[in-house]
Image 1 (cartoon, rainbow, N blue to C red):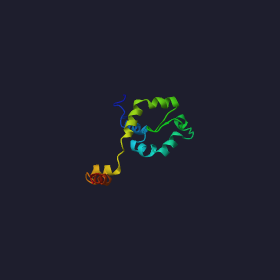
Image 2 (image 1 turned 60 degrees about the horizontal axis):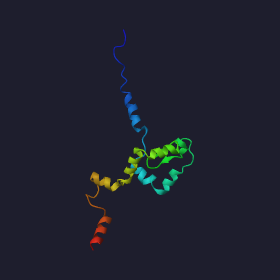
Image 3 (image 1 turned 180 degrees about the vertical axis):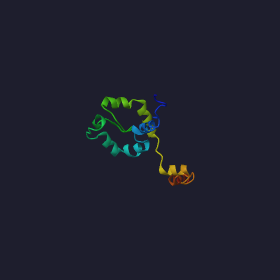
Image 4 (image 1 turned 45 degrees about the vertical axis):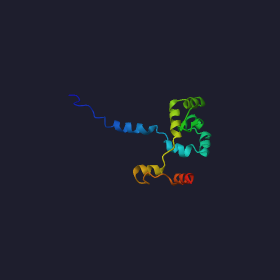
Length: 126
């Protein structure tokens, strides 16, 4: 008699798509700014010991992008790419602080500037 309808497999595809969204997730910009770009941590990341689990034995690492490269040539070409330049430009902007996020949510001081700025303005006027 044959098959009457197609098998329903489209529901199983949802989990595959969800897993693909987070598979190649890298560090966020604020994590890189606060932790990785600190001079002490940067030196440690650039001079890592040999690790056979990571690409290029963990010897070619881009701190700004939190990415391992296979060779020095691959790292140099990565640093010339648009992706690296865009990420590098985004890292120059200061990261959001907790106080800024609270103010945006309406929990912090309403539109008031930090007290250090007010003190500097008072000293300049005097």
